[in-house]
Image (cartoon, rainbow, N blue to C red; front, side, top):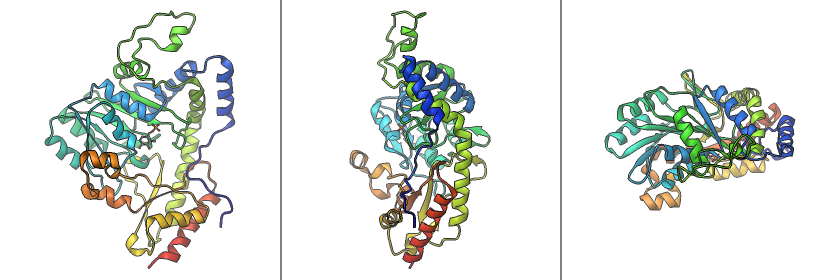
Length: 392
Ligand SMILES: *Cc1c(COP(=O)(O)O)cnc(C)c1O
């Protein structure tokens, strides 16, 4: 058994990141400035996006996206119960109403057929917010097709899906001129690219220009331009904007995380392959799927327990992993069973039976490009041992 605890998802931070942060601190410019400019443009190029805006979280990026599109009171937005709370919180923040629909049984991504049915029944729906769960892209052809036919915007929660692609198109790259599309990424501490806190919004230039204003008090020029020698003291406030700009200290980390990303992704892919191979055939488990026409970002490796074959429940399984010095997590506790949403909208657990049924069986195994083959072998051995002891 492991003697050292294997934490669930530690970031891989190198000397380049550390040195760049020190340089930023010594430079005299620590908030939004030249390093944010560089990170934004390198990220935009990496994705092949038309434009990109660096912000201080994915939550902020999603909030700005709704504000830019003028979504507010009286409007509704379709999303999934299988996500982190902030995807849905931002809909509440702008005074609109979330409409949740259930997920597909294999990927646990939003089910386009249910989206179609909900849209047909409700002309107040203005946007679809799909979440590429675990890094596996949603069925974007179907979702974009619904959006085009009904004139809806598509705001993607891409917190897990950097880098990922759907039928050869990177998540975050232009979806076509005939649909309004904004995509929000997260650089939170445990995401594939980590700056501690941070996010990016990609989309068409004119919407990202608006988003930039929304991200910093609605001012027409950002602080860097205002205080730089060639700038001036004058600015105008055009919108009641937020304070979501990314500081240069975070961008310093992001620049080198982005350079490291292809290598980190190769390692994530190897680890996923090791899990797939090592866990295959264990009767108490169902392994995550990958559809043929996508590249997953391999952000989370979520197994599902076959509870009918086990003598323990999911909580006990997680406790047994912990006893073997293996960290784990659950992605996600569905939105509709959280007290705020349950009480406000009167949801019952079986409102979304696919999401709720999967939730009770989900366990996310440790995944980080930092892990060695030995770490992964330890996890596989621990899972096998628990299943051996607790299969009925
Ligand atoms: C992490 C996460 C977010 C929020 O990202 P922040 O950068 O922390 O705001 C949103 N949606 C999903 C699915 C996430 O996993």
